[in-house]
Image (cartoon, rainbow, N blue to C red; front, side, top):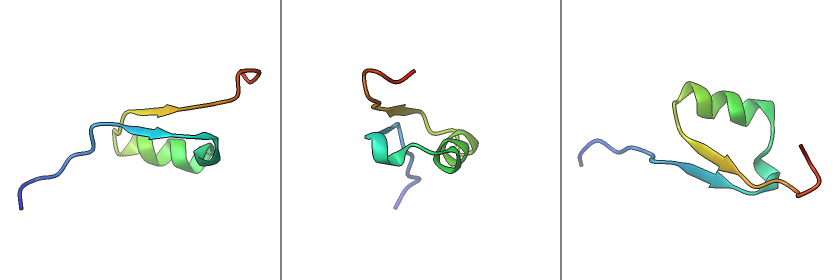
Length: 40
């Protein structure tokens, strides 16, 4: 198998957390997290 690469990570609110963000940033994985409309 060739080299695999994650293009982007899309998740819902249950994936919110410093550990997740830190991992994704360190791995240079672009991400989009859906949050509630009333959150900033």
